[in-house]
Length: 366
Image (tube, rainbow, N blue to C red; front, side, top):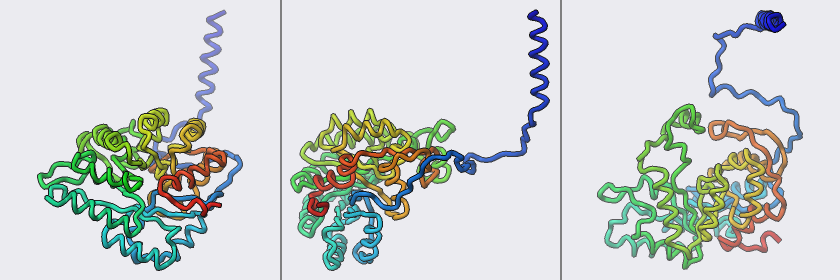
């Protein structure tokens, strides 16, 4: 009986095989090109305007001294952006030119500037005194915080060619003064960890590194990811009286459990979501749990200013839409899901946490 059953299975398999369409090996599509539109039919709620006036804590406007601010404010109004924080204030006379343009235009309540410092002259005998003097001047003309760029801690070197670590003890008085000013320090350290990993099929940033090969780093270029992150974390520990905002969710948006522990261990550190919204959108349940627990520690940020790209942020944060794309496939080839954040949490993310840290006028939201 078993012999006849085996014969039957063999005959059936032969029949099915004969009916199969043969594979045309000449038809190939590269991973870069394979991006078929989804056939999923689900409710969609694309958004071009936030439901609540918000603060963008992470924006860059290098030419704000001559920029048409009426045009910028018009674009902000379309997005429902109440306040933009320009992190590229540069400091000194460059910052004064920006503040003069802001004050002349009457947008003091809508545009906030952070200042910047130069650390490559750290070996100069008067470096510290000159930098602290600049910061005091910047505060006197309206600066509201300090931005530290990723180059400061990665590519900036001293006169001997040595990388200047962001936790260099010679810089400590600068961060202490920021604490005295009650300035938040928004710091971008390192980059996505995958940039340091092998550029192979196991690297989630493979496509980005192929299209942007200059972003690839060797294990010690200029140091390991772990080393650079540890230096920034040490900076936070060294300055408990200074509030820090770690840009891009401190590059832990893909590990919210660890990020939560990190925030628990560093009560003076906050994070912002610029350029990592795709990480939140692919884990909506975990992201909702994170926002519930750490709602007082996360701020809205976008990074590069492009009005058309905010829509994806609004859709992830405010809707319960399913399976929709990120606007840069090389950043995120996966689809995302809306978090549908409750209004009290959304208000903290959009403006309340920024009001607390930057000292904005809460009456603007009443």
